[in-house]
Length: 244
Image (cartoon, rainbow, N blue to C red; front, side):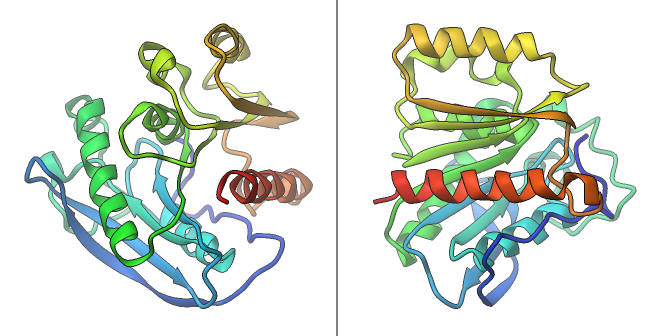
């Protein structure tokens, strides 16, 4: 698990207002009802984002991050993974996600992401990005091989194994924001993925934050503040270059 319930994401370097935010339900093509959380900016930058949480699914850190994206100008929706097995009711900090995780497959995540994409594009036609963390980071990259027509796929310390079987189908540029002292995913796994991306001629960018742990993107540590600011800068630069 990446972020605890008390963790909160750092703010973007330049903050605008949030016009609206709140929970909603999405209906996927397979009939699943999924929890989701949406935030809208007061001044839209012309870009949309789907947020893919870590293994806990939609919890307060990712709701807050969705609002942070809105502060940065994005129309953003965060999705949950467990509607098929845990329903759509709000969950407390004691939610036991482990029994539900094995019931989630890549087709489920893709279907729920597609429902979020449809909602965003129906109201705000524009470039669409995925942004994910750990388990969600791997899925964010993987969706770059889907038919969502992504402008880019961004993963914070994502799981490389979720991309391995679709490397040759990747069409969206990837941004990989990694930590050198990641105790969840060894760096050699990222190196193997990078070699495969190179061999396939795929477009990707990678930045390794030296001396930082898994889940460093958290405002609670002052020591990680500069890295969080740099991660935001890279995210915003990547989406601006690929969202035009």
